[in-house]
Length: 298
Image (cartoon, rainbow, N blue to C red; front, side, top):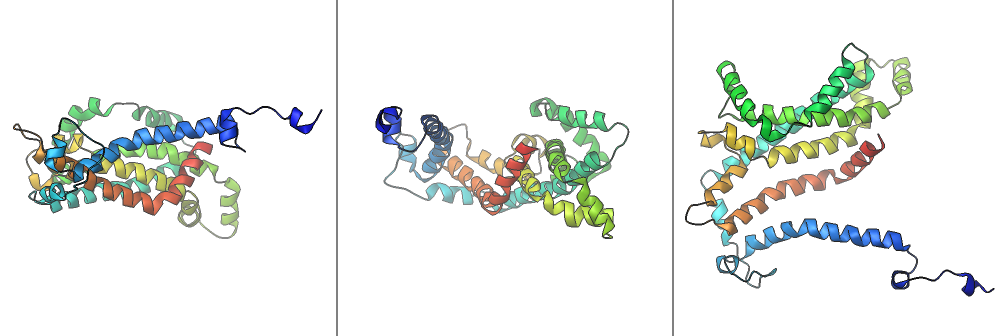
């Protein structure tokens, strides 16, 4: 029997894409379709931001425009205190990321390297904390922040401190649980070797252990940043009357009017809100990929 006769017959996919297995090709096609489905709303948001108002209100919407305009972006920048809203969002997201980095790392080290009474119970509580819906805690947190404000005004209602505390509380459980796997993956023998070389626990933690779990810290910081940056529920709930402390998502509410919503300006504002997230991704993308891969292995 000749080699050609022994060769298995290839279907249409094998003839169109030689050298690839049909299963892998189907998986790649499915991945492209899923990615396109996820990306289409983002494309439509950016497209609407550049469309003239007449095309946005048209009964025959089209996925393109031949007359782009910057009028929608101009309306966004004319909102009073838009720059202050942007700065408030940067402050809240930045402080949450920095505090969650330090606190989650130290907590993960304590839960992984030390043995103490109640350790297992604490781990279970951290895991359960991730399962509680945010909406179910909004009203209790409102009363809690009101009570905190009577003792520490900077962390009460109408202050950015209330947003920082709440976002930190929601970011830490997942961050601690994820970083625990990274810390556990570092061999104990490495710490013993560092101790023999004269390095104390503090020096080992920050000069050896911290760089080794940096990919996990980056992945966690991205999630914390996105959660704090895009938050609308807590910002609307806790910042009641102090407009100077409102964050960027609340600035878009200006374009929701009883007479009609300004969808062009709304999409332009949403596009501007997406830019800092994309910039953050560009800076940390390499560490993010390795961090997610490490989390899966752990």
